[in-house]
Structure formats: structure tokens, C-alpha cells
Image 1 (cartoon, chains in turn brown, red):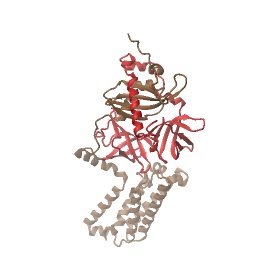
Image 2 (image 1 turned 30 degrees about the vertical axis):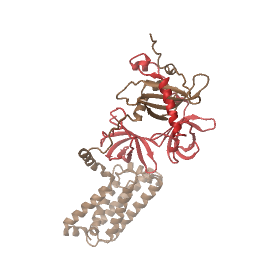
Image 3 (image 1 turned 180 degrees about the vertical axis):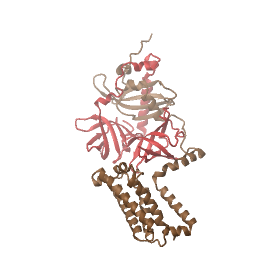
Image 4 (image 1 turned 45 degrees about the vertical axis):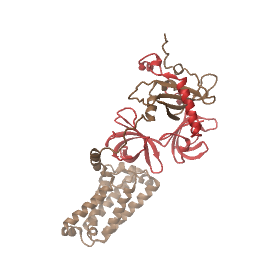
Length: 294
Length: 209
């Protein structure tokens, strides 16, 4: 079969690239620091050495695969590498799921399905390589068209499994959005509650009632054009502190864009007696004395 | 007392009562109520701390290990333990303003409250699974955004929740219009982490900030 005979070439090329990146890459130390190897081996320097050693092994196996495609042992060595990667990923996934796999030395994403598929690909490639009967150069010379197609498909599969190539897809995604428009939902009628809260929190009313309000937004509802926002608070005026509800009522269509300085109705209701508590917010907060009315 | 205990008819009655209170004898605080027409003048006066509760506040964070009645047992990230007492007056945020029923064991939590003599923290406000990430938008689908977070570009899936997800563009007001989010934009994403599938429900996405 064509794929069997080309397996040494494809695996060799893949391992040569990933191995060289680990062995010679300038960022290997940085990558190693995020892998589970650091914890297993005790310190970062050993993790870097281990990652470079794996890179050297990959490069050596790649050279053997490319030079001796019909021999059994380079394929077996590849399969062992693939099995080792799978085991390492499984171990890292179980013990430190947030760690990076360090697989291709540029890829620093956490271990996911794609990492496992890549390792499985190496394992499968190794197994296929052990039964290769014809040297890949002879086979490729015999069937150049089919060989090129197989190589292209394999390269595509590896690329799809590589998070390194995400940026390649970006222009395509952008183009798709430009052609077909964004799939995201557009504006719905009213201002969202978060917009009312944002408006409130930038308002003078919020500053003035800051000494009373303790909780974040507790409840909200719309009533007759008003949006009522309820917060819990503690009012310490009078004889003793008492739990209160602080109610803010705003125009429900107002946002910081349409109404930068909103008028907000503020009232404080005693939670036990359910009676409004007269509170002079401006004096309480010390913001400013209101001007006398004439 | 609150809709936490009686989400049905009584909750609505109470809302109606509170609406009357809110609109009846309310103080109207706006620029004109201060007498001055320039609200900046008000800020020129010495202002108190925006959150006076801060000085007396206790703060706790961690993962919820058990829920016993209205007490949450929380294992902190630094090996500490907290008991968080929820009350009628505790606000609960989990993607949106919600009630204590929405809290599950395994959720992450930030709580602000007051230290009680028995060692618990009586919570004023609780934020469940809240995350705030600076991301780059890498892909847009109908119900989710693909995001890359941090220098290494960790892939994060941000779910768009109908009726809840809002966006802010160029420092403008929050809006339910998400159509102006573009691929390649840098975005601040505030949302709720979902422990079950390690994605994020987006509460608010801020772009062009």
C-alpha cells in the first residue's frame, strides 16, 4: 500500500520538525517551565534537559526512518515514542490538566483532544512504518502523483491537529464573516439591566448612598417606565443600625450614552418595619451642601 | 422576605410595595437636586470612599466544598477555610443577579461580608464563578466566541447567553447588540466559568476600550 510505504517519510518529516524545534528551539526553556516535567523531575533545568533529550531522540529516529525505511526498528522506535507521548499526556492530563504539553515546542495550549490525536498519529505512523516493504524514494518515484496527494493529505491532517496553525485560519474566518455577516444577535428593544446598573454606579445618587449600601444588586424589576434596582444596606442613623432595602428608580431606557447625568429616585425602606426611612443622602455622604432654595 | 424564599406571588407583592415606596417619598438625586447644574462641582468637594464597607469588610475566595443550609463551606486557594453565611440581604451573582439556589458545590466564589463572632463571614455580596479575562477574539459563531487568553494564547470558549450577554464598544453604554464584535479585537470578558465543561458564559464583553 502507498500509505504504508510513505509512512516512514511522513513520520520522519514530522518528527524531524518537532524534534529539531525541541532540541534547538530558543524557547524550549520557556515551554518546559509550563509542563508537568518540572514537577516530576524536581526542577526547571532538568525539565529543559529532558525536553531537549526527547527532541534529540525524535531527531535521531527521524533520521533513521528517512535513511532506513524498510528496516523494522526505526518504525518500532517511532511507535515506542508515540506510545510514550500518549502515556505522558495521559499522566499530565490526570495530574496537572492545566499544564502545557510541550509536544511541538511552540504549542503551549493546555492538553486537549488534539494533543492526544497527534500522539496517536505518531504511534500509528510508527506501526505502519514497521511493515513498509519498499523504500519511500522508490515508491514516490514510481507514483509521483498519488504520493504527492497522500503527502498533502497527511500534512493537512497534521495541520488540522496543530494549534500552532490557528492564525492561518483567521483570515478565512474574517472573510466568511464579511461575506455572510455576523451570526451574533443584534440589539433587543430595551436597555439591559446591566446598562441601568452601570448608569447608576456612575451617578451622584450612587455616591451619595454609598454609606448605606452593602450588597451588590439583589433584585430588579420594571414598573411603568421605571426600572427599580434593589440593594441591601445598613442604615446607622438614629439610635441603632438597622437593615434596610435601598431602592433606586431610573428611567428604564436611560443609559450612560443617552443620559450621562441621570436623575435617580432613591429611597430607603426599613426591612423590619417596612416603613420608608427618611435619609438626607447629601448630608449623610458629605458630598455637598445643597444650595438654599429661594 | 426576598424572592429567594418566595419567588412567586409574595415576591411580586413585595415588589409592588417597594415600587410604591421607591417612587413615593423618594429623594431625587440628580444634578439639579444639588442646586448646581455642573455635576463636576459636586465631585470637587471632598468625597468619602466610594465603598465605606471596605474598611469593615471581610473577604473570602475559594471553591465551595459543601453547602449546609445557608452556610457555604469554602476551601481557599491558599489552604485556608471559610464558612460563608448567606442571609436574606446577601446578593448572589452567577452570570446574572440570582438566588442562593443557583450555587453548587464545586463552584468558585468570591464573597464580601462581615466577620461574625462565631468565625463565619456574614456575606453582603457573593460572586460565583466570576472570571475577568483579557482576550483576543479568534472566532465568532452563533452562540459562542472563540477567544485566546494570555501571552500563550490559551483557547477559551465564551458562550453567548441569550437575554444576558451584553457588550460595550469604545467605552459606550452596555448594550445587547453584539454584532459589532470583530475577529482580532482585544476584548475584556467578564463572565461566569462553567466547571462542567470549562467554558465561560459571557456576561459582558468590552471591546475597543
